[in-house]
Amino acid sequence: MELEFRNVTLRDRDEILGALSEDVYAGHDYLPCFFDGWMQDGEHQMICAVDKATGIIMALDTVSLFDQGRTIMFQALRVHRASRGMGVGSRMSKHMQELVAQHYPSAERIRVCTQDCYPQPINIHLKLGYKPVTRHGFAMGVITKPCHQIPMSQLSVPGTEDLHVIRVSAVELWACLELMTDDERATLIDGNVLLIDWMTYEPSRSNLIHMEQAKGIGFAVLSSQAPNTAEFKPHKLLGFYAYARPQRLSGVHLYVTPYTMANPIHFGMLALHGIRTLSHGAAFVCLSYEIVLRDARTAVHDSDPPSVSLATLQQLVVADTHIELMQNTVKSATDGSLLREFSVPPVVQALQNALDDAVDFSADYVGGGKIVLEKSLHS
Image (cartoon, rainbow, N blue to C red):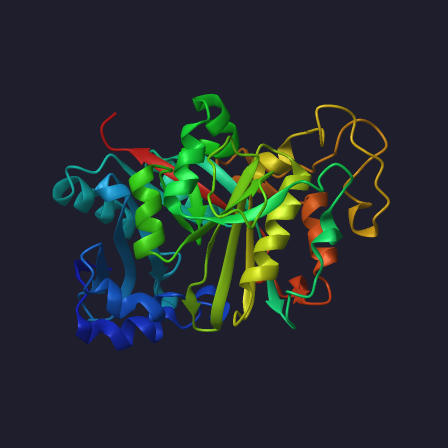
């Protein structure tokens, strides 16, 4: 098949959102909600691959600018059902690499974020020189009733009564992050990459402000300060979460991504607060969590964890001095493909139990996690 690569035009809209996208993301596609904006905002360049013989659009990919142009992400990649398995996706990806090298000389890196349960797109990028940067678990649920009635005590333990979740601005969050050492920040934010709604951001002051003002992303921190204090005092963080409420074909999706120092209790408090307070008007909850959370074996406190009898935490706390966190790893098979071992961490299972009356997590169409792959452009 001979392909022509060109910029997408408004006249391609119906074909791209129709035949090319008819089975994408199981009805949760985001492109129809962003197509018109991406054509005009100067931060996206959509490229299509057209079969020269038939004139049919066989593939689409998008250059998206992040981190003030330092990072490029490829988004909304899709291949026509009739041409899958014919190498069209690989040719599309190769063309996009060449386009970036030619037209975006100031970019420092390319990133892609994809589901970790599909080895084919991951393998394509590994062969092109990409390396894994960070991985997140992902749990999606349908909101069946208001979540604000769920008490925060569902995920509380003795010794955490003085901790509160406080909404903060991007500038206030950065003031807290600045107080942390590089090692502390690396523990808090794996790979130095914030992953919200399948998009990656550097945790810098200017970026956080851009996320807040241009992307509608908000933040909240876990703090010992009183939540009604008029003046927020920056301090080293126990954890924070970022959230977004993007529109999808199936309705508003609430994305909540907690970041903690690998502490499951803090993770649970942040996640539950975000879902309880931000789910109004949303149809789905999408919870992301770093893989390091499930790979580590971390004590609740510096000393032995307290004895907890709450039903929602029975799977979380074990008899010894550590909290057992299940693993989720990607391994290389003998043929070079990636194999995924998936199990839900106990803290996430406990959170799902706490939300059981309001969120149906059995409706999760993703059923896995996310992996961010990165390729340096100047190495």
